[in-house]
Length: 179
Image (cartoon, rainbow, N blue to C red; front, side, top):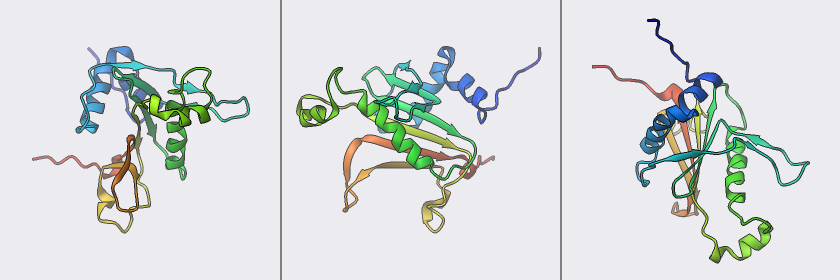
């Protein structure tokens, strides 16, 4: 019997490993490992990976993986093989889609914001698996960290909003230690 392997750093391999219904337990385990402080995901529902803008003239977004857990929290997982100068901006843009879709149908966004007391937003997580490192940490002690978790913070370093999280895995910093 000939063994078959999928390279997780190719579009085909990544989606084969994580975006098929049969491999959903792998994705759940992966997310649970990243979000250790978080309630465990028991199940996920895959959502449409193609997101259209509000207007025909708006840019659209196509996610590698877009899913939702049983409590309505949204997860975008992106694999980025080649270094892209504006990858952070892209993930911030991507995070607007699951936030915006939480507004009730027929409700314009300004009315949603005004009535936010009656609407509870669900958490949004944008996870980037990178085959490169960001230059931002070049002179920082955390420059060799594999996982960078970013939340909105105020000027005192306190979390301002805990339902929007960006997680970047810099795979070149990952080194498996063998005994």
